[in-house]
Image 1: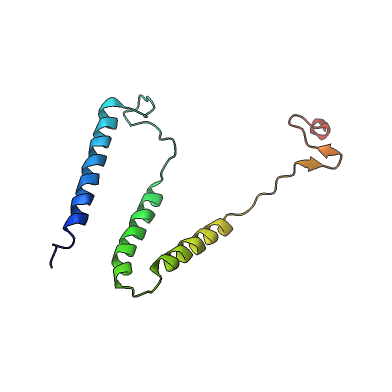
Image 2: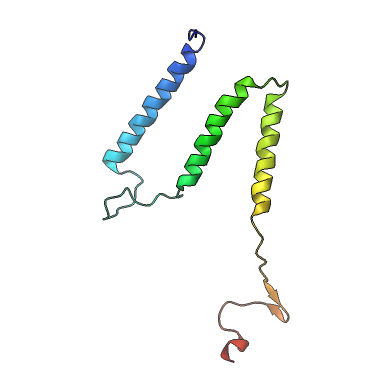
Length: 119
């Protein structure tokens, strides 16, 4: 394979990999942004990432890296947009709605004990 055309991409990727590695080392040694814990872990992140979410993202990236170069589409940007949009809609619709009643029969529901709570 001829990598001469891909050399600028690899150099850019290597630059950002080194940048993120330095950032990770800075966070590791200074503990910047990490909550203090006593259990030997890094602490709880602000938004927890579950293992299946990381595996799903990695799988999607590898599938895209394998499939997208082989596709011959005139509007790849439109196709990707529609696929991501439809996938997001499916995820959104898969989450059941929990109805929240903010108004009762006689007006707004107030927080605290209700008259029926003493029965």
